Length: 282
Image 1 (cartoon, rainbow, N blue to C red):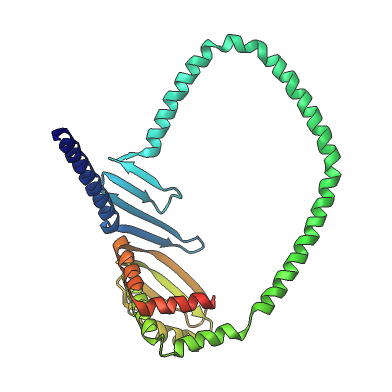
Image 2 (cartoon, helix red, strand yellow; image 1 turned 180 degrees about the vertical axis):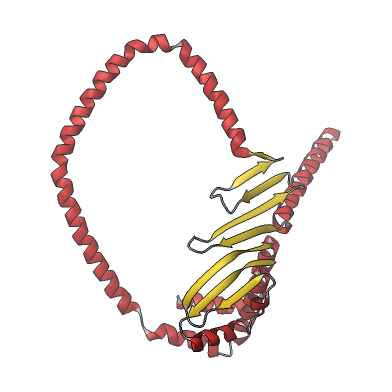
């Protein structure tokens, strides 16, 4: 009996340790912020970078703005560099073993070379015979693709109707979905505010070539708080048609916020009703 109790006690402690590790890992993933940077320059594509770290930067996953690859660092060391070191050691070991058995392989090289030449000659003859057939098949495929494109364009024109637009209007106007739509609207506004960057640095120069239109756009942009962000300069050109955006933005997000949004939407019956109705329309 004492042995069974000891085994059960050990299993309980092990299960508790595993559950605590799972909870700790999930909490670290949810509550640790992901810091991001988005950079935009004139005549260049928009570039972005991010960084997330755990345990006082002992574990880091990051991507710099100037690089295209994601790097994982453990205690300040790049994981890819460690892999390269292991691969070099393995190559050295393999090179030493191959050096010992090189003498036995010399006799087999000539036979393999002759066999390879025979296979290449057979392959070339087969390619010459199949060349004409490939060209005809290519032309047939071209005509089939053209026919499929014509059919798809016709079907898309036929599928478009005002029924979907009218159903969207009825969804917006229906009192049954009014509460759910208001809640979705509030969630979207809160999400946009949450995703707003903490730091903005740059300038936006724009102009339509018409002073009246440029002034109207400037007045519309001035109604938003983002136009008065520190570090952002909006420069209108009333007599020139131009649009130039240069600078960068920085911010951070937490995964727990998106989980809360999902749970609020899942627990709310009005939001679920609206989503089901939209899915039926699609």
